[in-house]
Amino acid sequence: MSGLMTVVSLSYLVSAACYVIGLHMMRTPKTARNGNRLSSVGMFLAVIMTFIVALVKHQASAMGWILLIVALVIGVGYGVYKARTVKMTDMPQLVSLFNAVGGGAAAAIGTFDYLSKPNGASLAFAFSFPVILDLVIGSVTFSGSLIATGKLSGHVSGKPISFPGAKLLNGIVVLLILGSIVLTVGFPTNVWTLVLAIVASLVFGILMTIPIGGADMPVVVSLLNAFTGLAVAMAGFVIDNQVLIIAGALVGAAGTILTLQMAAAMNRSVANIIAGGFGTGDSGGTATDDVPVNVKETSADDIGVQLAYAKNVMIIPGYGLAAAQAQHEVAELAKLLTDNGINVNYAIHPVAGRMPGHMNVLLAEVNVPYDQMKQLEEANSMFENTDVSLVIGANDVTNPAARKPNTAISGMPILDVDKSKSVVVIKRSMSTGYAGIQNELFSDDQTSMFFSDAKKGLQDIIAATKEYLDQ
Image (cartoon, rainbow, N blue to C red; front, side, top):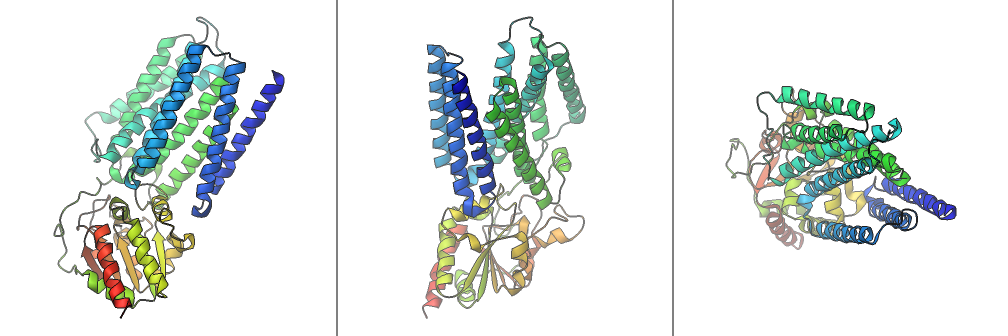
């Protein structure tokens, strides 16, 4: 038995190493896929070792094994199905849903292990404290992530939702959570304090998320992802599982760092985001909604001429590109230009799309060379020498209003697209982005608007550009 547990412990160590190395490899698009694969290997090894421990050490019953296998098949099947069929535009909702599953699972582990202790047993602080933290963090993550999923998918209003007495209710719920923590640690055999903690935490997760607007929802999803990691780590302490502790701590740390980076990219503190978001999301509209009088419309032919005679072209992808599933067309256009000696790069803003790395994943899907993906600072250093900047469905991340005081995005780092010699914007309408304000770039003298769905618009531009390049 001791030899087997040594093998299990070493396997858990290898799994943890796979997580750490895999997470490090996910820092850059070039190695992200292999990093994901390596982390998956680590998770597979951890699951196998857990099954072996359940078989040999805990001697699970036949019914227990049936439940484990059924749960595993359902979980793996659903996960594979969702991951393979999800649209890129729905990826943030899927991440948020997985956060809910992770938080809920961690809370369930803590609850089961607590209730499995003999009635009236004196539970040590080292057990009761991790349990209550596991339940509180996991429950907050579960309900908060479900609300975030609803907001991102449109099933819950993307507008900040508030009501009279909300702050007072929040305060009461927080006091109930703190009280349940103290009572659970002080009187660990009282099950009702556990029930109070779960209910109060579920309510707090809802109250924390509903006042946050669509603009800040990606940051909230990242924060809840960090919460999931902490809940999993606490569950690891509860059941004395090293791999859960390590994996949870890694997810918690990575999620926290990502949350802070996203908040910095939006020039907003996490506290301000939690206190109440801004914006309600892209509301659609027509090409004439709130159009400034000096907005210039253009055609695919005119854009084709500009691109055919350009030396340096910068493509700025945004959520509109993902929504139209136009990544194949943009890659085709870029290859057409590159094959004809035109220098093409992509300017990637940290919060373009609906989640960090959204644009990188979208472009990597169609094999865009990684060295063409320029991050914020590098891209901004290139705009002054750019002949044509092609903005595809990006809005707030290119808005010069960020450089002015007293706007919804004041101080937010943006892509300096307006410094290009010429700017072409492909957009379905003049509707606002998540911040809810008009983009001043659209009315600049060097900017032309091409009102079209990104996919159809790019197809027309490709045809026009080919015609001029062949002359």
